[in-house]
Length: 244
Image (cartoon, rainbow, N blue to C red; front, side, top):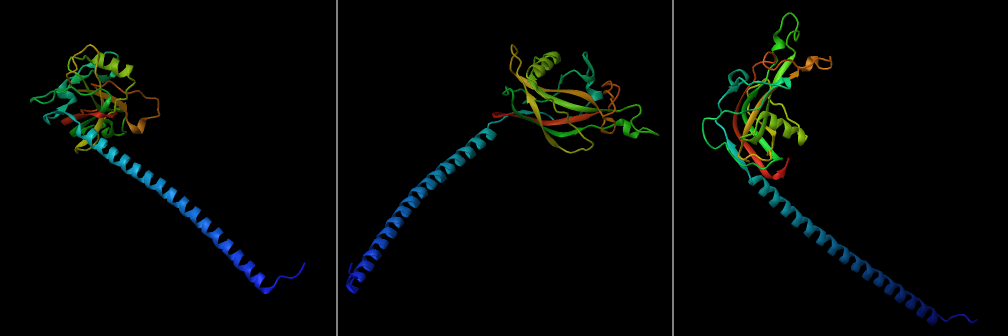
């Protein structure tokens, strides 16, 4: 085979360069097309995300704005002044009783098992055994906590307890050694067969004080031990649009 002339070689170089240029351009075109497609997908995701965020914000605002409020009168009530009776099935707690009221605006139709909060002016709970001498918590190792629930105005304490058990609800004890306002989560229930008109109930329940927990002790009689807990209520807010 004869050697290529300089002209042929130059022609081959130009052809190869043209082919390379075309290949590069094709690759760039593919890259640009891919980038364009991906950017479109990204923009679509961003648009959907923004719409979801806007929707979530609107739903959050609506759910929090939708409130059923019971107003109370901030009157101070104590374990002694209310004179509750002991639960016949558990001497460590009292029966549920309605929180006394002197004004209007406390009866509502709350949504059961939805987020419900009690706004307190104060809830006080102390440990009488702390002050025993010469050794603490020898005679009184209990502390009386205050518990609340929103239930039908016609409900009995036994019916409320049955509903709590049936729904496997946890009742949160409230109160501390301070005199400040605080908001607590409580349960809202509706007992079948009763008018759903509801109001706030309270009971007192003894627990073993922290320093003596783990010793196998049981809480003591609610009326004789645990201190004279007290509370006052500003309002109860039920959020029908928010799950508890």
